[in-house]
Image (cartoon, rainbow, N blue to C red; front, side, top):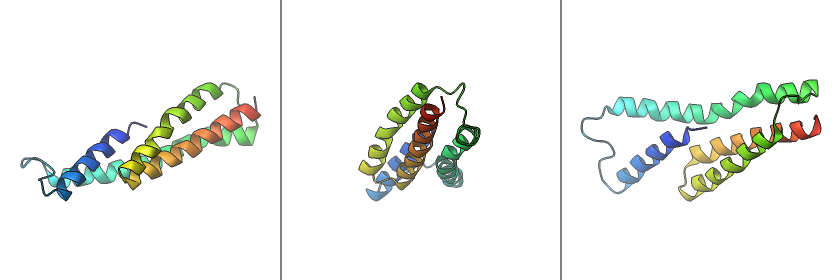
Length: 116
């Protein structure tokens, strides 16, 4: 879930470009930066799907042994402000990524509570 750091830097570069400032130092490899931006976007969207095996295990087997509802609830809580951050900065990648994380986290919490 620490993809947000890369997204923050992407946003900062976009803001500099909008002001007409160079977004990267002259020595920076722009192909590398574009590659990193794409990779960060993909990781931000695909990352929440890594929780699918946990969700599958809980809801298909109806067992949540070893799953801490409190830990997942805390992850839900600390992830929530990132949605507002993305909205405030109009960053669709952050918004989409963290909404997906919230859905995944909420499903685990609900499953852990139902199938204790």
